[in-house]
Length: 298
Image 1 (cartoon, rainbow, N blue to C red):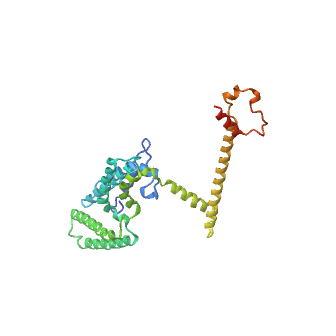
Image 2 (image 1 turned 60 degrees about the vertical axis):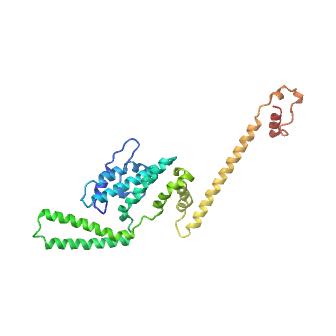
C-alpha cells in the first residue's frame, strides 16, 4: 500500500468498517497497531479481505496485475487462517488448507518489499531519488513541445517505470524464510499424527513468560543486579504456591476424617444388644476401625 501510495485509501476504508453483532472493528489506523492479540486477529480476519479488495480498486494499468496478485494472496492466507483453528479435521478440511496454501506461496512475492532490510530500502530510496531527478530533467527539456494529455501519459509511464526499477534491488535482500511462514507448510502434515492445532495453545507460554520474567522485573529495582532479584521473586512465588497446596491438602484430609467419623451405624449394629456394642471411651475409639467394622458387618 505504501509503495503504491495507496495507504490513505486503505486506512479510510479500514476505519469505515461498522460494528455489527459480535464484531468490533479497530478504531486506529492499521499502521498504528504495533501488535495484534488473538481476539483482534480473529475479528480482523472476518473483514480483512473486503478491506483489501475495495482498497485496491482502480490504479494504473501497470498496477492492476500487482493488485490482483495481492488480493489473491490475501484471500489464500485468510482462508488458510480460518481453516487452521478447527477443533477437528478430516481429509476434506486438510485438502482445503493445502489448496489455500498453494496460491499463497505462488503470489506472496507481491509482498516481498515488506520483507526488505534497511540496506535494501536505503538502496531503493537512493535509486528512486536519481530516477526522479532524471524525470524532472526530461520534463524541463521537453516542456514546450508537450501537450497536457502527452504530459499526463508520460508521467504515468515514468511512475510505473520507477516502481518497477525500485523493486529489482530490493527483492534479493528480502525473503519469506522466517518461522511462522515455514510452520504453515508443516501444519497439514502434522495434523494427522498429532491432532488439530487448536489444542496446542501458545497462551500458557506467554503467561509463563509474564510470571517468570516480567513480574519479577517489575518487582525489582531495575538496576544491573536485577537478575538475582527476579530469581528470588520467582522462588518466593513458588514457595507461597507450595504452601497453599499443602494447606489445601491438610484441609481436605481433615474433611475426609470428619466424614469418616460421621459414618452411620449399620443395621447389624442397631440390632445387636447394647452390651455387645462398642462402649469404649472417646479417646480409645478409632474412626478407621469403626469404618472397617461397619463395612464387614454389611
